[in-house]
Amino acid sequence: MRRTVRHLFTMLSVLSLLLCVATWVLWVRSYWRIDGISNERNDDRGGKEIAVESVRGQVLIMSLGRDDLWPGIRGWESIHRPLSDDENYDWTTAPWHGFGMTHWGHRTNRFVMVAIPHWGLAAAFGLVPAARCFSTARARSRRRRQRCESCGYDLRASPERCPECGVVNPSRASATPSA
Ligand SMILES: [Zn+2]
Image (cartoon, rainbow, N blue to C red; front, side):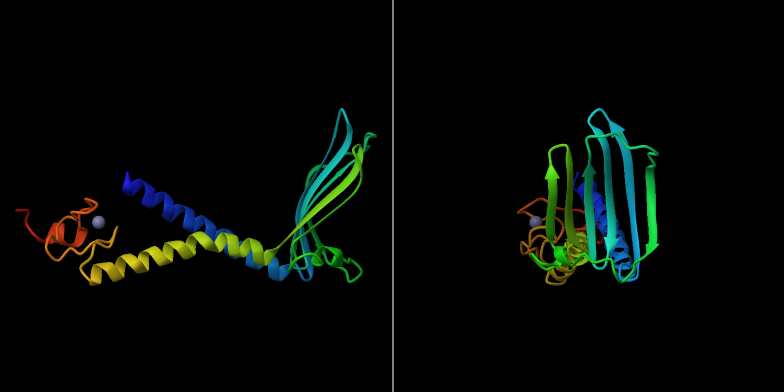
């Protein structure tokens, strides 16, 4: 069970690290290119578009809905285009370090946009790998001081198995024949 949890933690931290790196790449690119994905569709309430775009240090999540049907629906589409100087998203930087939200319209004809800065996403994705590094470093330091890797209990009197939490000490259990 502990092993499964540890493997999940490792996989999660690798995945998070990849997402963190991808966010950094998008972040740098976002100052001269817009990358994103959009979806257009009609439903019984009219035309709808949702889009996520990486623009000038921010990830913008947009939703546009109208009460009339849209002709020439495009479905899913990826967005890759150069960022022009006149594309101004300054309003989204106003509230707090790149986090922001705006909306206009009413129930059947409205636009909602939420902005999340790349740094915020990169920090969120970096948390799990950072925790992983911390726990690895802590286990190493405990091992060096002859303490239980799991709970920190002093193992000098019982090097094979922790009397506090029951974890078998891997380095000693294999080296010392069991009594
Ligand atoms: Zn222990």
